[in-house]
Image (cartoon, rainbow, N blue to C red; front, side, top):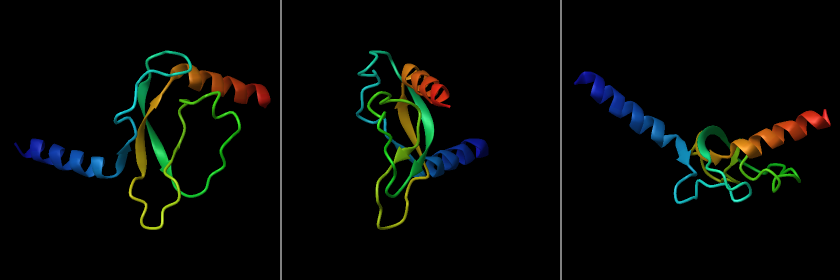
Length: 98
């Protein structure tokens, strides 16, 4: 019984610092038509550089930009949909440029 209580507290604490970006979003990549999987990524805040090839790999596994925030940064991590094909193509493109 004690372990269930500890597990419940852990889940509540974990959910308090993780943003679920998959809620109400389709799990199908609109570019490749493939089913995506959930990925655990870091949340970043503030003004960030958006690479010109973002549209080429819309669901490649990457950090989630939460935008500019005046108050505290609520989420340290996020759960996002990521497409394995987008991620592979992004890695290949980055490797070819090196």
